[in-house]
Image 1 (cartoon, rainbow, N blue to C red):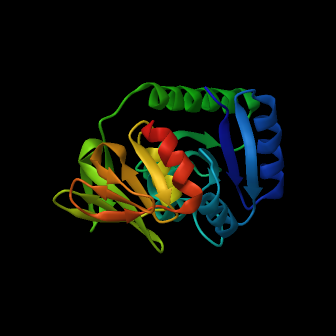
Image 2: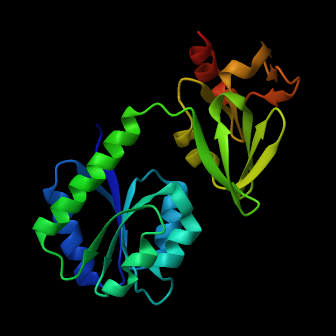
Length: 228
């Protein structure tokens, strides 16, 4: 499997330095960003690819728990904190492990192995569906029923034959969650299901539902390659 792209978020510079050193020692981890400012980290994650966050829980600007609530399931987390009483609340989220400070390299490496196993399982399974949060509820959506996904500012609209789901997410993140074999981005604002194509023109795709989706010029060759 490819390297796990890691982010470190901690308001203590010495803690960041220690974790950076640990990450560099583990061959299957790759450090892509670290910051004392959780707001900066949120912005980075929204605009760049990453997989795993080493996240301190107690931070003055934004707690680790609230950080996870904002991002939802976009990332997996290894929590780092000096306060063991936060462990149970943390495990309500997409947590791989919990590291209690001071953190030894041996304990860090065990957590890294847990993360590697979790990502390996996700890569090897072929899911037919996923869950999204819309209107305060978790919804199970089969991939084959999705017509298209549309970007709407800070949200995406997942459109099926019978319903639409407005989800707080980015199109880039959604593209990573959908099966590459069946979905393709054809416009800066649209991902379509290849199995739902009725006809293809030079500037638009018509789906079996008769909805017309524009084709962005920079996405045309990728679409044609996928169809072939």
